Image (cartoon, rainbow, N blue to C red; front, side, top):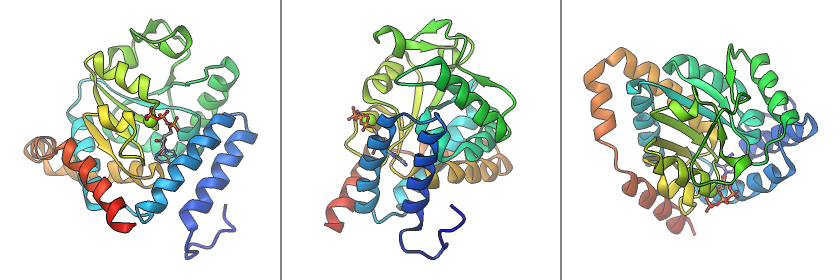
Length: 245
Ligand code: ATP
Ligand code: MG
């Protein structure tokens, strides 16, 4: 997507479309992923295609929560892998988290394609293929996780997660961070920390906050965690959409 000029008014949207298309061609993203992208894009348009202040606060709370976690895991699906592979690897390194591939429509071929795609972008270890544990309350294929990955995690980042899975993970007692452009999505509604923003903007922003907070120290981390209010963040995003209309 080098040919898209940085000052193009729809730059982010065009980059996103291009990466998702390439993801489908490479066998990383499912065709369902194209539909999810379209839904997200509509909400991004309504939000003004920028990170609103409440989403920035959510990203900071997410960074603090990941830093304070015992065993944080970042979940990667086909859209995430296509859109922000490098940014996810950098975030994992910054907060010392595991990366785990987790697919709604799981096929071994796509699992392998995403794993090597992440490795091409610098990932050292990618979990997800052992699939030796289950998320209770979900049908077989969608329940598969790694015992030493998501199953054992205290904090999980699930960008663009489907509503059922998000719900089941929070019922397992995980502290769940969701990135989703739709404040009305069930995934966003069940999250401890909903980040209502485009994943393209949100992931590097979490990493920036994490670097900043790691320097600032434990008190600043604690403050960023306790200051955050999920309901307020959802309300602020919905208000932005309504005001814009
Ligand atoms: P529900 O959560 O209400 O059950 P769903 O999860 O079934 O809905 P999908 O269309 O499967 O809905 O999920 C796709 C979600 O991902 C949408 O909520 C959409 O806003 C979000 N999304 C898509 N692309 C992006 C993106 N680039 N950044 C952030 N969120 C995105
Ligand atoms: Mg959803």
